[in-house]
Image (cartoon, rainbow, N blue to C red; front, side):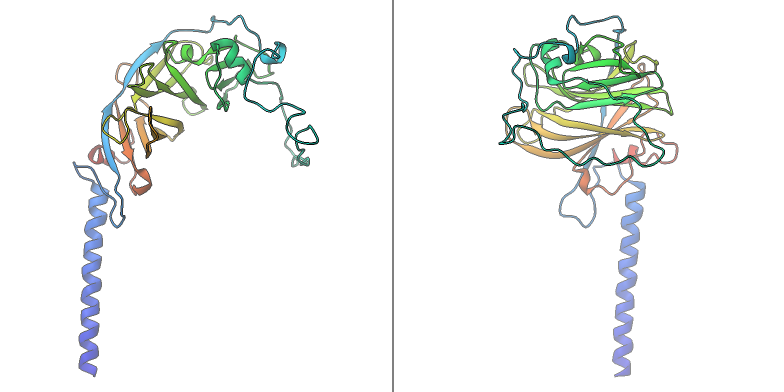
Length: 316
């Protein structure tokens, strides 16, 4: 019995050792990466990583560009049909439900409150509107930039307009025929730069990309660089595809954007992607984009542009 127990213990220890060694190989392989598409160990699905090129264009100064239409707060909206609820049609009471007020905590006060853009403004500028009105909003020490679907405006911090209402296509240097939607923006205090993104689909429905506009001027309407990242992905189901709802974030080194890949013309959905770009790339050398597909199965760290970890170069 004692001998059997020792043998069983020896077998168990041997198995534990083998598992530990195997786990070490997996971890080392994961840390150091490989030159081929990587796969997450122990999961039913795998992610893939690849490098692609990024194009860059100069968007000229549009700070003097103005529209002939005013804000919807001062325009006649009665003749414009938009997909939004109106008082008297939303229920028996004819009014929207009211949420109870919540007092602000001590030390916090509302600095400004003013009417922003709407789908009506998009209609006035572009002749059409898209619902719902996806919004991007960002602010620096002097300006507030608001983007709603296909129109944007620049405000002073007191709420007065610093620009006219302008098409988003002009902001990103796109032709009027391009379909654009889902804008987002952020002012990065570390680099004192404005970052804005939008999805774009060509009028022939055969190509898509997302734009990343970067302005290092205090006024974001002055000359800027627009980086274009292809999202067509011709080889996946139902493609050509587009990257829906591009969302982004920044760290000290890199810019990261996520999209949801849908067929342009069909119902197919191919999952999420993460795109990583070097935050320090310039117009003359836009660098490369590292694309991760099915990132929900990715355990790694994408250190594009990072001095700490260049493992993305091997993963991609």
